[in-house]
Image (cartoon, rainbow, N blue to C red; front, side, top):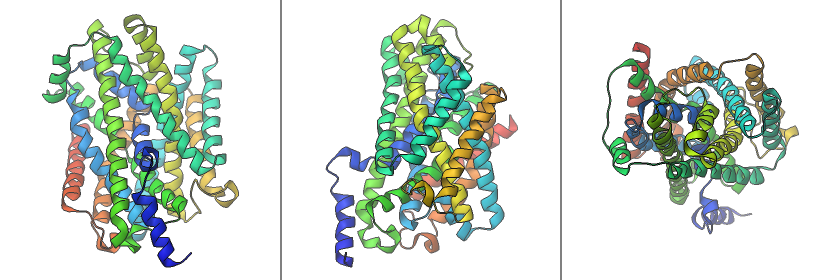
Length: 428
């Protein structure tokens, strides 16, 4: 293939998407994975405890989430490398180790909580041994991620995202006041008591999660490998269509996660909170509590949604850990690689999932696991976001494709909010 042919191939693959599925990829998968079972539990608790009054957080966080993920995706697409690789090249090693170690700890705990919630949800539908379900879900996730071809695997993940539709349907089975919903969405209510502060921190920490930074950047690199294109930095004049595709993908993907989170809050506010149920132990507990109030249909949708989105989120959690470790140690990486070509990368995926399974074997409390995941993610996000912003604004990293003014403003605004939220958490 000549240089001209390669340029033509790049342009065609990025500007002539004949199907929506060709545009939607890393952004959609990342956005859907953001509403993992742990996130579902958090949003359910907010709806049950506060009703519609904190629904505005889902609206407020959307532009912050878009800016953050778009910057991470841009780093991957422009440099041809993930977050950890760029930290390794441009920052002191202690900074890299701090970020990666906290990510691994948070991801392992999150994996444990998600696998446990999926098993508990299946137990609601098909009573049986929960630990067996945990192991089966872990095994299925690993087998799909390791042995299924990348092109087919990404299609599976995209279809898994449809399970989020379950939560959009649930509120329609309940008696909802549109005025109350709109007021909760558009009129911020914020009291500075400890419970409200913790709810705000949990919502933002669950939404803007560090593992998503690593995953989406890594997936943009994977897309370049799949399409046989070069990093945008080495062809900045042809970068426009690629950046536009990435922006559309991310805006829609993060829209999916924000709308879903909003509907989970609305569903639990209209059913559980309205009937005096203010405490939710886990995502599957939310599904179980819905049954006598909203009926079997809502219960079934909620439970199936937990399992479906968990099957998407578990590989994302394990995969983001594998990307970070591979970039740190210089291992061959990529889901487009055969298992024998990237043994350490796939080994890291297996170990991450095994760690999540092990947490369930020792009887970890789901809510305690969720709490500590939020703590670690909350502490990790601000410094990592600062490093990401500095890298994305640095011409030595990004060449001529540093952040445009509007995206830079959005990224720093998101970073400032997360720093404030972390400070509130530490003070509380």
